[in-house]
Image 1 (cartoon, rainbow, N blue to C red):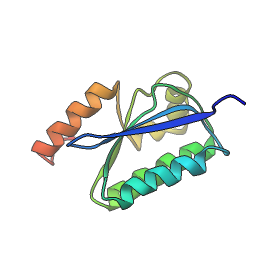
Image 2 (image 1 turned 90 degrees about the vertical axis):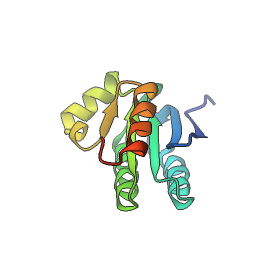
Image 3 (image 1 turned 30 degrees about the vertical axis):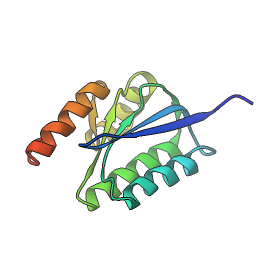
Image 4 (image 1 turned 60 degrees about the vertical axis):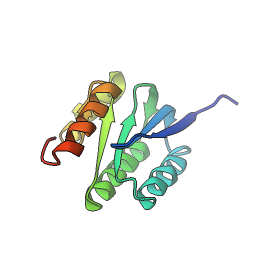
Length: 124
């Protein structure tokens, strides 16, 4: 059986970088939800989610992203998406979720924005 999903994380001084590779669907969403909720429970409320290599995302995956985004904001943090492209970019545009999330072109841009926010919390 081929790997459907891989989730890796790295703790940066300004945020936690989480990379999701593969498919975010009904079978993999619970594991992603658990992993991201765990980070929030540890006090990691500033999350950059690298979706550059996400090959598929269904409605369950979108719901996980929205849920974690809302939980992070309620905790005084945020969720930034890095590398939204291809099908995911089209999906975000069609569902208008592109207005709900802060989206950066790549991880470097997200980490730079996180560093700026650490220096000046009023900066997006």
